[in-house]
Image (tube, rainbow over the protein chains, first blue to last red):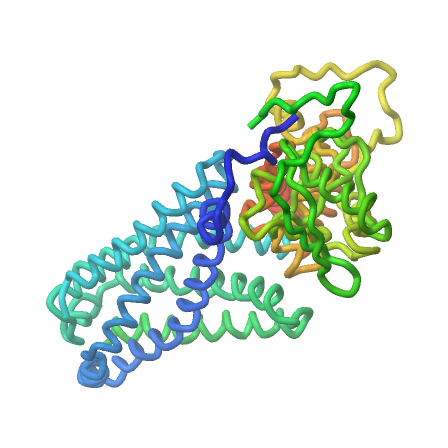
Length: 126
Length: 109
Length: 261
């Protein structure tokens, strides 16, 4: 017999979905951040590749990036990178270290860690 | 994905975990107060260690990303089969070429 | 959670309805949702509600149940968006103020109303080699398997599956990738991978690999979250990922060494 199908009390609307769907949220964030990084990577390589034409080329390119929009995108990408890595480490742990985790707690910690890195980036200044 | 693709993806994930940690650390350290080309290149010019590091980073990413994208495309679009596999190989090649070029660019600049 | 159910006396065989309280029930029929109203009763289960509707209001409603005590898994359906056993789900626990919405299990073809065709589910069970392989010359005597051995503990963790289909219905990967074998089939395969008597391991590991196999699991953990038997297919599938990875690497290594030998 399992008590798993009976829940303690009436659950309301959106909140009821939040906790049990932690694993799905983790997978979705992992996937979306991965897409963002995959799209960004070629552009990153091309930008750095401008250094082949000399430091001035790279510098003038970097000059284009000193605006609010790009700063926000950079923050987003740094956060995405940190988030993707941390959630990926969670997957590796689940697959190779056979841990029954308290999913919601772990996922929240991962998201917090990812955002913390993003925050550090922002605090570093323009 | 096949077991070998799975091993390739998880294996490169471990390599990338280390590389990304180093990279993020470098970014957070380097970008304080803004970033100029001179600062980037000052660090990477003629630096064998960075070249090797970025080279390995690029190879790992060029393997890891397309395998992930393949799963996403298979599950969220109707694209599958040989043409998808071919496209992902092309993405891998693109990332490899552009990435190694970038690593060399900051080494020789 | 286990509130005492009022025992009907001999003179009064039915459980009295709570006066003045009604429950709105939207049920998926072949041509859209149909709304019914039933009285709320103490300790009422979803199965009680569906049965009452079918017997007293609309005899054309199709649904499944058998044991009605949480042993057979026949009564699974989607209740307010989540796959559950109707016999073990109390209305009071899941009904919002909006009442109940009942639909057939996700990811399976609908036969009629709330009854789905379980055939694809069982076909995947077979495709994952979910049956014991004794081999050509099984030993005459019993195998000695220590109950606390790691392999047996891995089997025990997944052996209680009764094929109810809740995990399969909960799995998003099955929705996105209709070929995906699914949590139940893979969980069963893992219990057999850990069966020390089984002689079909190589073929089984092959069967659970690939785009339809264990590598497609993205650890959403919906299966583990919804399983009414508190099983954890996510971790069985993780075991298969490790086993198939090791096997593939061994074969790769063996091929390499044979070539250079």
